[in-house]
Image (tube, rainbow, N blue to C red):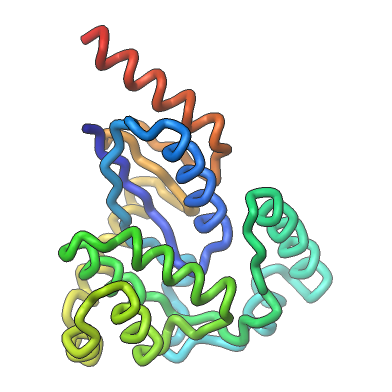
Length: 213
């Protein structure tokens, strides 16, 4: 088996698109060699704990409403091509994602990272839920079979906050400056939401290398 580490943020639409494309490839090659682990990367490490009004955030980030509409129109087009019907209009707030990343980390301990990551993307991009809210995160945890009471207690504490921030910082120091970023076998970095065909080619090359080893 080959480790595939994915650096991602649950409020990153390209991360959701990249995950969808990867999953299409894995479905086409069910005997793929990958063991997947998700890692924290905050698009906005300086985001206030309470988050920010989404319109204000986007217009500030992209230099005005016109640019924000253009950028997200392009993202929506690519999402639809991959079968994702995202509801950007339902999103009222851009959250701080430290707590969401903590939940993803704890889900990994229980072997439920993929379920939690998918549930976070769905909650944010389809349902317009505030995934910076601890109540929402507990509900998502419960829906994926995690103990919501335990998750709630952990979220009220500072458990693993420093660890998440240090992992984020470490990735930036290693040269990662955007997500999604996929790291194959701790050696090869593949940045961006790559098409399924590329992943199928990568898998075939890895299987060939293994066969010839």
